[in-house]
Length: 125
Image (cartoon, rainbow, N blue to C red; front, side, top):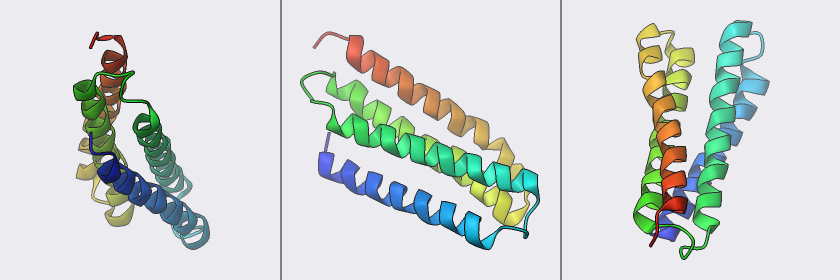
């Protein structure tokens, strides 16, 4: 696992979640419905949670986890951030309801990431 690559990805994702959260709090207040605001907040929260999961994954000693499954976990977390959070951001920004069809695929990616982390921990090296 190329840790420097994943640290950069994690830093970008963390920065984006803070910027988007601040944007929503300061710029969108009163411009969108309460339901859309909650949807935006959900996207920001899930992005930050899984950014922190990526950071934790990077920090786990490579000797503790099977590298292949650890990498799969990272990839699924990143795909989940892009698909789940990204589709919600696009839904709010464009009001195109078809973006909501992508969201469950992103949620599934998050779940697969957690499963991969579990497999990385229980598989013998």
